[in-house]
Image 1: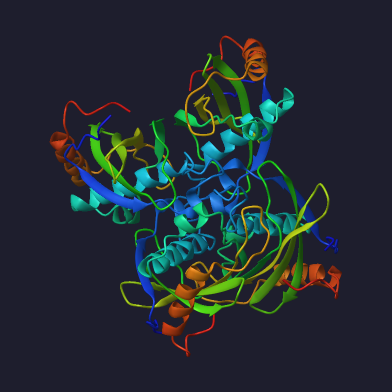
Image 2: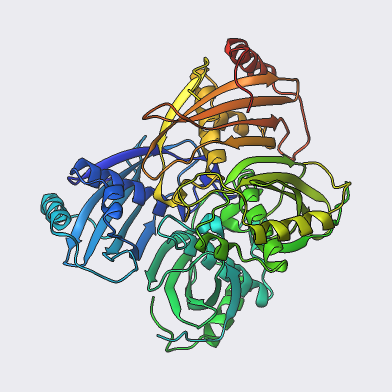
Length: 149
Length: 149
Length: 149
Length: 149
């Protein structure tokens, strides 16, 4: 399987020694941290700093994750994380990801995370208008034939 | 939503300070480490030490995860992880989990992880006969009406 | 080297798979999370809930750590963490730790962490009187010949 | 305190959301993972791939760490890690680090880690000649007035 390159943000990171486990590959939980980096950068590329959203008292906790793992990532390997917005609703937004080995574009994992918008006490609220507009623009730019996680 | 208590293993752990994030709750990736603890203990309760399986050159890397998050877990809270086997095939096994807040049995998250059996080089193989028998016994003991993740 | 058992709190934990690295041992950074668990329990045993201290707007960030590592900890091994208070000053408190393999009491690591008391904006303040009294009582109970980290 | 810039490798990384804790800063244990990234890059800049050393059956586990923390690092902040070799012996090597906030070069933390060379079973051995030569050249390039951790 070759990596798709849908519109969106692509970051690269190196697998940290601390991220490996005794199987000699990055532990499967680390991909969730990598995906989080991916959506931070996707939002930044669209002019939205997630840190600023939180300062307004608006939180986006993760409500659901799905990840499929195809190949392992080794210590010190360069990994690409492609991130795009796959669905926007009034109170939730879903990001999709493909993690690839940079050296040969092999797909390591695909995933989605659904975030729900809440106030600072955890009560679900509508995504602020200026943020939802950016998310909808990002979703419109994403491919309709993106691979499901 | 009240926690179900299907047959299987239940462990308790305290949320570590290092596991919290700036939202003041355990980061969503930590649940994958907790689920891993849960399946280690479920296997131990059935007489199987996962560490011993690996010493035979048999690996069980995670091929897919799904988690739904309902409530956050705070620093120092006791969290229960209920684990059971929900599906066994010749080369894969799926574990299911419910994480609850021990104080009031509220469901924090539910999840599943599908593991694939491989040799030490990552090639998929059949689960060894003695292990698959234990997994099938565990699956038979699990409820048919367990909640989906 | 045999484990010392100074007065203080002792907890046990199992090494998580996610905590191992490709050397097949718990990654050295994990000991800092274990030590944090140790001091949470030491404080609890003395009637102080660290979570409650923070709710009063009093923080205890870590200002310095020292760890010496002697043996590795394997996946699923039981590890004991012995924790005691080794120094109390008006604005700082130092905790000391010995991590041992529970099976044979071999010392895995020793360490110290110095915490500084701050308000919620990070400004150093005196440790609240009721807390400092508990810390001084814990320090008085600790051995004078405890091993240095 | 202003950051020193001794010869050596400097990397930059962004604080991950998953690395923050409920104090709203990167958890103190994360610096050990960052330092590890720093020494991987320092070695790479000198033509040594740590991953290759391990493939020869030579391990460099951490025997001791010391870190002093001066300021917190916030989510999404750029952090610089300056790394150099501060001491080389036949069986051990010590790396030193300064972590700075990239925006204003304020020192966040300083630290050292002493690594001991072992074979694949954990027995201390001499650092291989080709590696020790590189480490000595790096140490010679480091400043004699570098700040102690």
